[in-house]
Length: 326
Image (cartoon, rainbow, N blue to C red; front, side, top):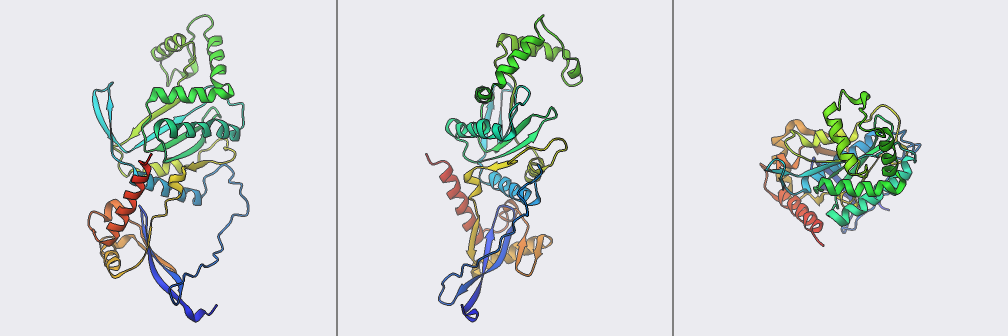
C-alpha cells in the first residue's frame, strides 16, 4: 500500500444524543480503504454481575433510540375515565415462588419465550431488557418497549410461561398451606402491605384458587423531566446483593442494528454543523481523531432545519415504516 495515495475525507455521524465528526481514509479514485481496527477486548468475559461502563453506554444509546423512534400513543383508562399520552411502557416480570433454577435457565426458558410471544401477540419489536435480583434473591426482569400491553393479558401470559418451571403451582401450594385455616395475616409485611389490602388479596386469591399470582407490573412512562437520563440511570444501576449469572441485559435486533446517519461532510452539512456548534458551544468535546457535539436531536432540530435535519428525519421515517410493516 502506498501511504501517499491515502486520502482522509471528513464524515459526520448523527445519533439521537450526539453528532460526531471524524475522518475516514480513502484511496485515490474513491476506493474505500478498510482499515483493520484492533478492538479492545477485556481480559475476561466475567462481568462479575455488574454493568460495565461499556455496557452502560450501549444501554443509554438504545434508550435514546427507543425514545426517538417510538410514536406518541394515547391510552384510554376505563378506571380513571381519562386518556393518557405516552411513548414507552415499563414492564416488570417476577417469579411467584422461591427461585430453584439457575438464572441462565430462567432466561433461556422463560424470558426468551415471553419475548417471542410478545412479538407475536402485541407486536413488540423494539425492546430493552434488564435482569436484576429482588430483595428475596429471586431474579426478575425489567423490559422497556414502545408497545403497551394490557395488564391482564400480561399477567396471564407470564404466569403460564413461568409455570413451565412450576413457579405458579408452588405458589398455589404455599398459599393453600399458609391459609389452611382461613385468612392468615402476614405480620412481616404489615408496614408496606396493610391489613385491609391483605384481606382483599386473600379473597381474590381464594376466588381464583391461587392460580393468578400478581407477578407482573406494567405502566406507561410519561411526565418525567429528562426522561433519557432517568431511564438510563434506572437501567444501568448496579445493585448490592447477589449477582446475576450470565447475561445481564439485552436488546431486540431492531434496536441493536441502528447505526445512525453517517455521511460525507458537504458544504451544506458543514454549514449545519457550524450552526449547531454555535448554539451549543459548551457541549463540544474534541480529541486528536474526532469532534463530538453532545446534544440531543430534540434540542438541535428545533433550530436547524438543513441537510442534517433532512437526512436524520428520513432515517427515522424509514425505521418507523419498517417497524409498522407486516
